[in-house]
Image (cartoon, rainbow, N blue to C red):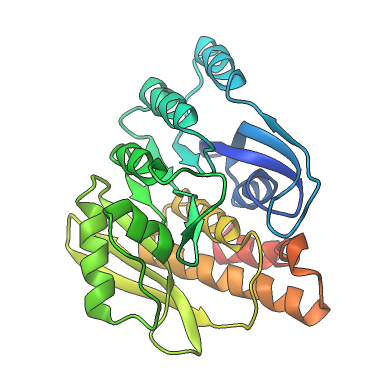
Amino acid sequence: MKHQKRVMAVHDLSCFGKCSLTTAIPIISAAGVETVALPTAVLSTHTGGFTGYTFRDLTEDIPAIARHWKSLSLHFDAIYTGYLGSFEQLEIVSKVIDSFRCKDTLIYMDPVMADRGRLYPSFRLDFPEGMAKLCEKADIILPNLTEAAFLVGEPYREGPYSKKYIEGLLRRLAALGPKKIVLTGVWDEPEHLGCAVYDAESNCVGYAMGKWIEGSYHGTGDVFASALLGALMNGMPLLQSAQKAVDFTVGSIRRTRTAGTDVRFGVNFEAGLPGYIRSLGL
């Protein structure tokens, strides 16, 4: 049997609402990859549409967890970062990456901080500058259009988006340091929504698109990013991995819409896991 790969997932744990670690762990595990959780905070629910949720910050716990793992000589094939709630966490996670990064370790960052033209309420206006600095360490980053604009210090633009704009933005993001970019929320006509993929070393751009489904669904960014990473860990090229992630995410949204589930509760990705596993050839 081949060596089982291992991913460190640095995200918050929202106990209800299917996002962050509660999507990353099952999806990446379904791809046959050991998924090790490094929680940045624990919440009773995610913060989108819920009130009265509990929140416990775990910033002080992260270095101790990392030191213990280091004492065990753990090796990670990828480090996958998501929601980081403060400048202090940015600095700590930067040190964790330095401590565990090896020649073959993929540094994979979802710079979670904004959507629909605005920073999330918990972030200060100078937070994107700190996130951009952390992204210098990444091999791959996966911003949405809003996060991309903040990272490069430009005003957010509403769609539809021309290929000229998207491809210029991809190259400006690559100038931050990462060799590969996956830009989500890309569309040039109302019926299709997906992502643009850029490899700075080959200067190649590709698109992975799916059918747009009406509505806004929490946690889909985490579903997409986790499915993409699972495919990458199975040796698939980036563009092919992105298309599999788009297809998996669209299917999850479609099932949720058909069932009429409260959109705050997250999407039904679980029913799509058998098909996802087959698509990876496992």
